[in-house]
Image (cartoon, rainbow, N blue to C red; front, side, top):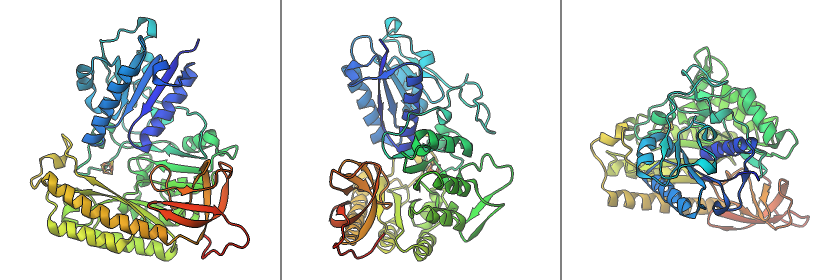
Amino acid sequence: MAERFWLETLGCPKNRVDSDKLVGTLALEGYEPADTPEDADLVVVNTCAFIEAARQESIDTILELSDARRDGARLVVTGCMAERYGDELAQSLPEVDLVAPFGVSLLDHVAPAEVAMPGIPVSLTRKSASTGPDSVGQGPLPSFDLLNLPRPAATAPWSYIKVAEGCDRNCGFCAIPSFRGKQRSRSTESILAEADQLGAANGNLKEVVLVAQDLSSFALDRSTGRIEPRIDGPAVGGRRPIVELVAAMSERVAWTRLLYLYPSTLDDALVEAMLATGVPYFDLSLQHVARPLLKRMRRWGEGDRFLERIRTIRQAEPTAAFRSSFIVGYPGETEADHDQLLEWIGEAQLDWVGFFPFSNEVGTYAADLDGQIPEDLVTERLRECTELQDSITAQRRDELIGTRVEVLVDAPGEGRTYREAPEIDGIVVLPDHLPVGSFVDVIVTGADGPDLVAEPANIGHEAAAVR
Ligand code: SF4
């Protein structure tokens, strides 16, 4: 009988893609998915180390699954925590059989159940890894590079595709470059092939969501010449690879969506390419709007430039949807900075915004900065930002009531317009009978917080607009 596995995934969409690739690899090795963790021979936890709360959730999940697994089942911890705190985890969690950072094949190192030795955890490093087939200019890649592994076909009409790993930036609060390394991008061909394999080739995949740590810098690490985006004109050095990729992907699937765009890289060519896909959805990673604070964050830009970019996009496409995320309570954030952020939020009228409390990450530039903000003040500022944005989001959703929109049906009774990124934004509640994977014109009949309620558009419906 085949060995069975259970894979638990925590964290962001990029981790979801890594998990898909682990599933693909396990399937190739003859493993079958278990119905429950209790039934599995191999239990894998793909962890997240983004902030303290995420790390705690990862540890809690490891301990829960350790209790749940049957006698003899092996427990493997992988993902960001394994990469960042591998030795510490291996020492402090004797329940774990293997701590496997990125680039280490679980299957090469997990002994079959009969000979596994629970209680003797192993921590592996990637130092001995050899060069992978799609490596570019950053020295050796792991032999087990998740970026280029096969994935099972998508089970939903949409899928994330990770196009690069690592990041060349140096944001003050971010530990990612320290453990994910410099950016290394996949080839455009391998990304398009993955889309085909996920269901674009047979028409089952309707939407691709492109993700990377710094998506709009995709493949600049592969470029021979110097290409630099300029938000106030064409990129220096020619058309950027991300623009080419968006255009090529949109020929394969109906919707191409991009997540996490560093603001200085959203130049006219990229905006144009995104608008041409029919998904005018802009996820801008802004983090703050006060220039002095952004400087302390070692990031580009300031509030007025961001507003100007949003305004020009809205001029080109008045129905464009916007998302962003902000850090609240970064060291040195003054009352004036906070007020500027509130004012900016009120002016920008974005559809979706995530606010995160500053998390002091060991080893980052920000960890030792003076001006650390007391926790109760951070909580208060977070509350003010969230309340303001919640009212803006609710109003923008209410404005859609009575309009005709196109939805992609994700699951029975659930769909999305281009305004909603899967798993991140709201949803559209639909009648159960609409076929999954179809595009349907519907009339929005109500809104409930971030979610909309809609029914199929029939003759006789009075709709305010079609979009
Ligand atoms: S661009 Fe994103 S991943 Fe890169 S250093 Fe900045 S916050 Fe971290």
